[in-house]
Each structure stands twice: as C-alpha cells, then as structure tokens.
Image (tube, rainbow, N blue to C red):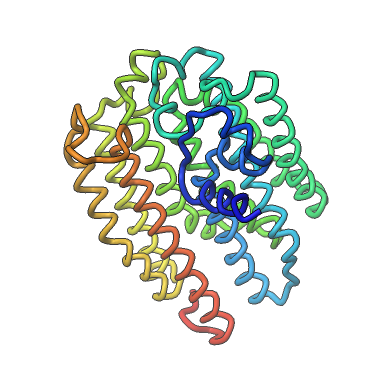
Amino acid sequence: MNSTFAMWRKSLSQLIKMEDKKEWDALDVLSKWFIATRSAVGAITLYSGLIGGLLAWQYTRMHNLPFNFATWLILTLGLFIAHGTNNLINDYTDFSRGIDKDNYFRTQYGVHPLAQGFWGESTHLVWFAVSGLLAALSGVYALYVTNFSPIVAWLFGVGAFILLFYTYPLKYIGIGELSIFIIWGPLMIGGVFFVLTGAWNWLVVLASVPIGLNVMTINLGKHTDKGNEDKIKGVRTLPVLLGETRARYVTIGAVIASYLVVVYLVFVARFFTPVMLLVFIAYKPAMVAIQRLAKPRPSEPPVGYPIWPRWFSTVCFMHNRVFSNCFTLALIADTLLRTFVPGFWQQ
C-alpha cells in the first residue's frame, strides 16, 4: 500500500517514463490513469477550479448569498477528469493517425500506453469512455444545479467540442493553442464562477486571462520544441504556421501580458487588492523563460541537460507553476482581506 501511495504522489507530481510492460501491468488502476493521462500536468486544471471558486466565494460573501462547497469540489474534480480524458483522446488520435511513431516527441517524455504496447486500442477507448462519462456527469450536475442555464449549456458544449476535437482538427489548423487559452482561462474559471454564483462577470473573465495565457505558453513552448517533427508529419500547429522565431516572441508576449493584466485589475479596475501583486514573486522564472525564448532552440541538448527534447516547454511549465502558485496564494490573501476588511480597495 505504501508503494501505491508513493506512485500516486510521483505520478501526480512528475511525468513518468516506463519501458517494462510487466512494471506497467503491476500498477493499480489509479496509478495507470494518473500516468496515462499525464496527471502531473493536471495541476493547472486544479488551479483554474480553485481560482474560480475563490472568486465566487468573494462574490457570495459580498452579496450575502450561500456558497456550495460540494458543488465547487464536484466541478473541480470533473474538470480534472476532463483534462485527463482529453489527454487520452489526444494520444489515441495521434496514434491512430500514425503521428506517435518513429520516436516522436510525445513518446520521449512520458508513458504512451498505446505506442509502447502496454495495452491495445480497445482498452484505451474503454479508459477514455469511462473517464469521459465521469467528466460528463459533473457537467450534467452543473446543468442541474443551475436549472439548465443556457450559459452553462453553452460552456458545456464548447468544452466538450474542444475536448473531442482539439487534437484533430483544431491543433492541425493552428487554433489548438487558442483553444487551450479559452478552456483554462475564461471557460473553466468563468464557468465555475457562474455555476457557483449564477452571475456572469466580465471582470472575472478578465481575471482568468493571466491563467489562460500561462497555460497556453506551455503548449506554445511544447509545439515550438517539436515544430520540425510536426511540420514533417503535417501537424500545422501555430508555431509551425508562424515559424520558430515568431512563435517564441508570441510566447514571450503571453508571459508579459499575464502580469500586465494583473496590474490593470489592481490599479485601474480595482477588481483585485494590491496583495495580488505577489504574483511578481514569479519574476525570476519568468525571466528564465523569456531569456530562453529569446534565443533559437539548440539542435542538440547542452551537455548534461537531462530532459531533452523538452526545451522551451520546460521553462514555460516551471514559470506557469510558480505563477499559478503565487496567483492562487495571493487570491487567498485577497479573499481574506475582502472578507475581514469590508470595503478595502473597493471598485
């Protein structure tokens, strides 16, 4: 049992590489799901659910409305499962189209059960179907608790469409990265806020932009890393369409914009209190990311570099994690200030 918990912790905190099918077969169901869905990256979804809930908590306190913690938990867990479901269908689509062959980028940094022969296509589809059903049930629950609100129905539909068609055709026509921004920013954070409050607030949508931008940088970095491979295989991601140089500078712009939006929400909109400026603690990893993105990707890994072929994606991921931690902790402090010091830094 201790080894099981250890694998859960490991698979939730880092991408796992595994070559031995016997080792894979010995894993429990949850460990297989965490590894196959790359749940270590799923933390970005938990951040979005948490942030949407904190903003809703502020709103309900301000307007003397009830706050449903159970609904918040169900929504956040459902979004986490939906993220894993998306990764499962991504792997199936790329595998069935012949993309994940010949030591392609995806198979170099984590377990790919299909490409490695750990299970067959029918088993993979069963895992996808069960995960998708659980995620869909949380969406149906959101519809139920909002009396089948048209806004929730629309958000549910858009989310399901992107989940199913992100890998093909959205990623193939250069709008996969925009889809990532929409999902992890306005749709998740704005959607959780709406379900918990019954109100659509455009300042909440704007507050979701820094998170959405930073999640998008991870994909921009990854797609820039594998731009050459994708170009050869006909996967026309945004970095393939733009070229490496433009893609790198778009990514830099997204990093910088995430801080500018926070500053606007503090000093102009006064939607946040100044405590949100704690996000600037992430300045150092932001500079590391910007400095790496400012230069072309090397053709070979530097001596001793341990996680090749991830190059831009690594620094974007590290910045996203620090930024999201700082944003969430600052928002908790912001919520406490607004709760215990009513009227502080009002709009």
